Length: 283
Image (cartoon, rainbow, N blue to C red; front, side, top):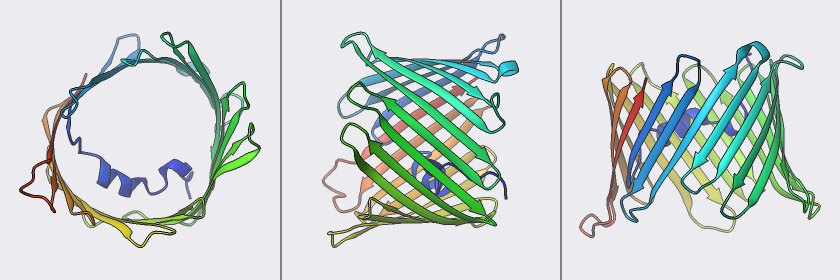
């Protein structure tokens, strides 16, 4: 078996069917470019239709492949500056070290994080440490895989309180066209998802969730259909009768248009439905 996914990517195929291709209530523009010297630029801006709030981010990334280094600078309209330095496969093959810092000039707030990740056949593990003067917070996760079976554990430990704040466990099974994923979060939330690639054009997904102490089970069904090489349509519905529809069209190489709509099936005539528009440019 190849290297298993990270804990955050368990069940990713099903998550993508539910999340990608939708942008309800937003008008969004994403632009990706790359200079001749190899510097990558990523600019993103969005406007919330309901609140009219506009947010944006600017990211620059430079990779020094010879030394396995990646430098990333980030800026947001919240006036937060971020710097990330990543070293991969230098100390030993499969080991990735990341140093991440953020700074807000308006408030003077600073934060830092050290991330370590190690991957090899049958294993993908990582430990992140949030640096805080009151006491660092430690995040740990590991996933083991064997012949399609996956098992993972994720935890968060707050050293300031000497307390385990999160403890999650997951089990899954993955083949080329089928994935099953279940997880238990903090012993109180139980979730599961199924992904199936029916054929080259159709993908489907189902998710379920139940929280201890509640009577209802949350569930949803989603599908994505590839109309042709440049267009696809997505649809999803959940137990709250919220129906989402998305349409993605590649207008030309490097230019993609996304249209989406969310309809409240319980209140068709009451309004409150949401539309979304997105444009992605890449050069």
